[in-house]
Length: 272
Length: 247
Image (cartoon, rainbow over all chains, first blue to last red; front, side, top):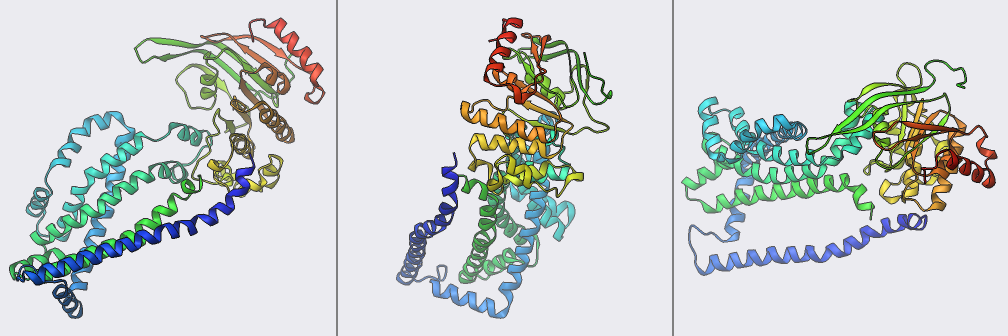
């Protein structure tokens, strides 16, 4: 009974070392993989030179040019802001509705067709209608992106709420947890995997839709720039903007999302 | 027969009727004219055949099921505090042992020193562990610590020693008695185990099969510390004489 408990502190310390060693090889493989891709790209673009398929160095050149002129950081910043705003809006509204529908059967039955309807309206239709009804404004743009994402969040969080363990809620009632205590200590930890899943798929979906929104009705942002260079037929610049933005999103994943997830599932990882 | 006590000091359960609607539309009568009382600072055990509605009664007592005919009067003034130990420990897996206990504390007791409670339950070194790192016996101790930390007016225990090996269960029974004796409170425990009830209880309440009512009461006036092996054997024999249907 007490033997595994005694030994657990040492295994905790040993675990990161082992993980580091195990992770070193995959990192090398990832770097090699990317390097191979760039080399292949370079070879292909050199063997069949074409204006529509620039080599990696031309893209780097375009990237540096846009960086020094300040254009790229400016438009990237604006797009990031829109992604963040739409993400927060979609997560908050979607989670609230999802938790509500997951715990109220009647309301869920009534609103189920609405959710299915919104899940299946193409993003483009929502964007166009939002611009027509609410004008070519920032609010319409961000709102349209959020509306595209909200049904997904609702469905995921509704499943999470249905999977809640009622015994913990009973315990919380017996010990008279207040609403906030209950939310933070009983509800949120149980919903955490569902929230992570929703935000993961959310970020990747939202940033793609934001570019479309910018292309259709905004005069700045990465989507606007890509549209501009599309008309100028400058593929190097298009790729420079795309790769820069993908890089930023990967950084966010590595610096924000993964550490957050790691911290919130600490109890699960220690419980070997 | 009842010692004089304030009207509010005892637990009084008067259930006229309680039924469940089954999934096929039928009605299952669970409790029928169930009347029982537990005096102030008395430790009562409820024994009955499985499925007779003991857990249902506890859920009603804890306010988790309010759909019944009858009244339940909890001991304590105003807003009585109830400490519960469920069949499973029901500790929040994502909070440490200490946080689990502290979260249950009412505002008035926030920041309370829990050292002696953890020490007397042998949990002093496990306060920062997560529940999944504990054995079932230790998790049960943590659940008992949580129930007692809130200084309850009523302690409710739902078979807190099941699925433990006998040695661990016995050790836990002694621990429970020791911490309960430090601050006695009205307690109601559901169990299947007559020997366990004879060791712990001041009064054993025997329930009938479903729909449950009280068949009879077995009062043990002898102080717990004087109930040695032989006395317990005698008590068990006379219990079985009085209630031959019990195992």
